[in-house]
Length: 326
Image (cartoon, rainbow, N blue to C red; front, side, top):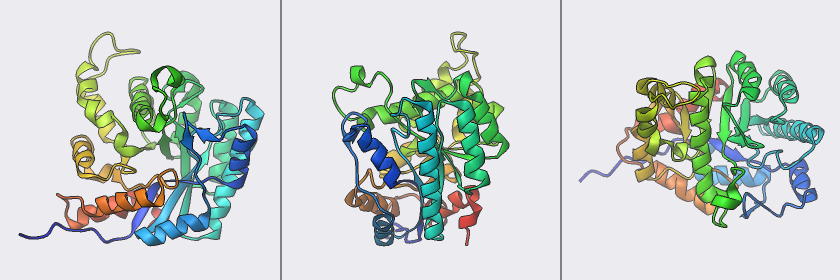
């Protein structure tokens, strides 16, 4: 019996995090010893990331700050200052290691004017590759009309948005005392995408490229359910056709952080074409051993040709970030 194809090409990791010194200090100053209901704060350095990359055949990592982003700060000015410092630090890391890192800018959400200013700085001065936006900010989900100017500005730039889950405000009531990444993160991803679809944000902003983490969370398993219900009159602010909803889901990008196993991948393929699937690790919130396991699972995925494996590993993401084409 022939052996299944095993992918060996270099990887571009769209889902990797960093904890620059200023961000780690801000977390400590706020008294945060853990995140999102008890999840440990990992150590991080550029060299540690490069060591993991070299061990796993990862050519490039796209860096972003994970949950809680800057939302743990109550003062709007403090959020703005910390976001600026994070973005400066990521840009410096990208410059110091040519070709090994890209970066997503943090925005001081939900503050619109400050976020618009940071978008201009991140793209215009720092040359970052896109923005990271959490699934909700102070309980506002991304279809909220108050956030529309931010999506309009990003649409004008044809920007790539890396969507990252965070805990819902009701975590204490529904989290069962366990960390939010266990279950609430996959749910919050689907929740905010549904909000973007039914608010017509994605239709209004067709130039946006939106990357969903963790194979879309629970979205692939409920996508056809959502589509079935979409035309019902009770859907707010307005019903949509089933096919329109599915088309919007299919046009999103989905990374395989923590999700490059065969059952999850097979489920994702029922919704997303291969052209929309990207590789990811979730390092360092996933330790090196888990990253290695996810890489090995990806390289062994069945039902893919060598060309299809390479598309997910690197070629699809090069359409989003052409500067990594060399």
